[in-house]
Length: 384
Image 1 (tube, helix red, strand yellow):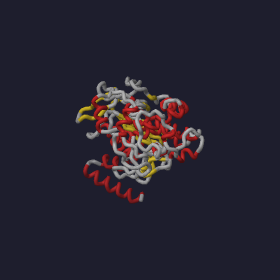
Image 2: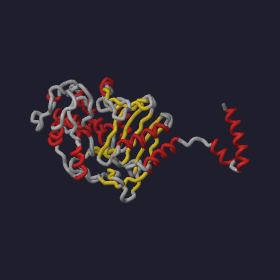
Image 3: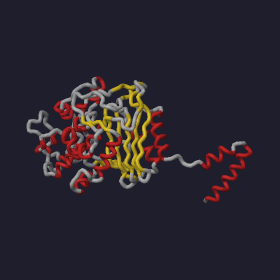
Image 4: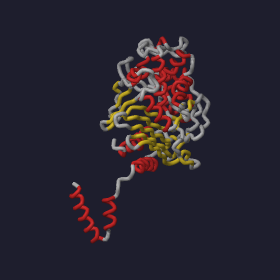
């Protein structure tokens, strides 16, 4: 093979000499492939510069074998002031919050506080202001893997209200009333439908069974042990941007609407804008979680990795476990979670067999772009 390429090179050099472009031809054929760092940076730059891009800036964090850790940035953290994105910029992480909440529930299972296959009526407050349909037939596991049949509260009307008045402070009973006004998509345990309401209810269960809010439980059981110092859970009304926090946007035609001040109360334990983190912290969290560092028994992680079929509208092979997603992309399994918040999008995945951890965040609500512009092109550069 090498001799054939050498003969081709000599022939092309001869032709190039006649055309006066010998140097260019030789350079093209002999040029070394760009280093992986440069190729990953190009992914970021192209994502931000793409005509269909809806986000001013992005962060990409990759830990791969044998390349090691690489972190890159592109674009702006603040489109109004021109402030550049940095590797330690913070983002609202949306539904990635679910993975943190599920971790706490499984820790409580290990301690004998919660039985995953017990009905949720025995764990919820007796004075719950809104009746949850079929709660005597719905188990904790069904909430964790979205097989409960409980309707979604994030309706088109709610989304419109969020856009019109991001400062709205949402109450749990209001959220549950919105959900219970919808039709159940299926009977408990007889289907799959992603529902933020499932995790809103899990937050109530954690508080009722421990006497401590789900926020404090996540801090004590996950953030503090892993020393995730850049990850913060905000309280209702705390809308002021944190240090190094990128501004969050939603595309409105060709313009960007700044929705950074959306109230953290909008989704509770389901995610939304309540948790703020960095790509580095999230990469450390998902790696530690899948390494079993947050559980006392390996069997607990096996429970978390018990996936059910979760048909993806795009036809991509997809499954949901207990607060974890699994994708099959070109024969490689990726485990983690994605999070779309008001003004932000993040993907957080590990490919255990390929030795890759990847977190990508950008500052606009366009989760599809996080996959198509950042994650998948980065994986192609990594050879996956």
